[in-house]
Image: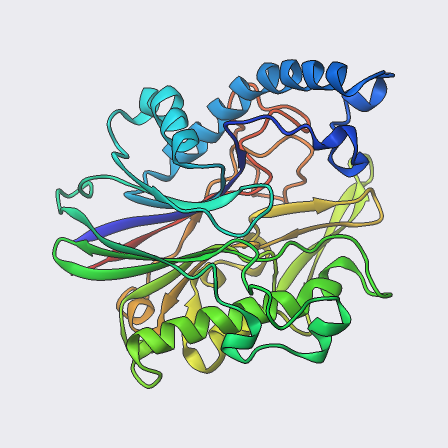
Length: 370
């Protein structure tokens, strides 16, 4: 009995317009920044036109990436609401996979933009085993104080002990796959953001991601028992916005690119994998071929890294010891630099920077659930 499980940050699957760019330059679209817009009313009209014009190609590419996973269950990040998810599935994905994802679940988390985690599921696996929804539990309201996770580092960054830990949520989904239990933890950790307090964006935001990881682990341990949790069937799926390794890129297209694997001194991912609690199964792939995201701030700062994870419990990983995840990179824009031998055929109409399926790549694994 096999289940194809995937995770994908679809990036801003919105059902509403975002007009915050008029007052916040960081949110302003680069195209609109070229023009002298005289009023907020004018900006709103132009933003609506721009968004509508670009959305169709983007959503087609996003749907192609999801279809390529052939997933039975797909965990998603940056979904506006259930209405947006239904409209996307019916208007785009349905045309590619038919009546595949009839079950859809999400809940409002803590992100001020309204981008939440969600899950879409088929009614049964490709082998005909029923996929049954049992329950959904949000942990969006957990605070640092409640879990005893408030630290001086967090205080120095301006956080309060009474604040909620998760920037979005840790959404707990209980399923039965052909009668076998499976619990999913859908997450989307704090993004790296700009430099702060003399630290780069990754280090400056690290204390919050570490707290989020500690909270996820505690939720799982409290659910199954600290001494037994690793031996139960569960998976953590989502965008952890952190990495243990990155592939640094130097050079250029004329003289050739150079790629170097760099290990990081610390990562919030380590909190979850410590002591064999769970396994990052993407690390079963070669070091140069684990990336799901291309980061660049110009020629001086370019790397490939893994931000998107399927972490299997110790027991589930052992049962699937030979399973190696796939990473669907066909929806990447042409600006993404691929190491030698990893090039893929891009989906039709993918642009230099946009349209694209997402900056993230879907990760999918076939699991033995017998």
